[in-house]
Length: 119
Image (cartoon, rainbow, N blue to C red):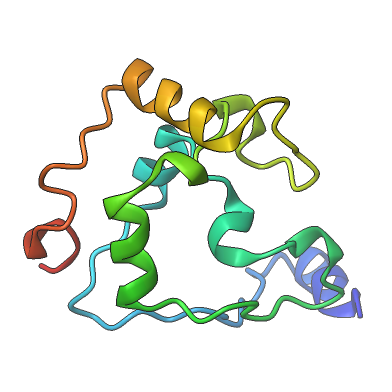
């Protein structure tokens, strides 16, 4: 399974990545904005640490995005825990998320405007 990685290193050629999630060209998505807001990887990608091979754990669709943009609090976590697949909140998820929204100045007004995600 690791032979493609070994070959890439041996031949000093970039590794060919197989895209798992492809969004339409008219959708603008920036991982950095979401990571800096505290949205954990597993919120959209599932438990990737338990996947022998990456797969799309859940469909990525406009309904999911809109639901999260309308109510991001339950999806937020401390920034140092964004990539921690084992993270469990030590307090009520909503209360934590609302506190993080206030601290990070996350305002849902405008998050569902078409131009936020469509360019």
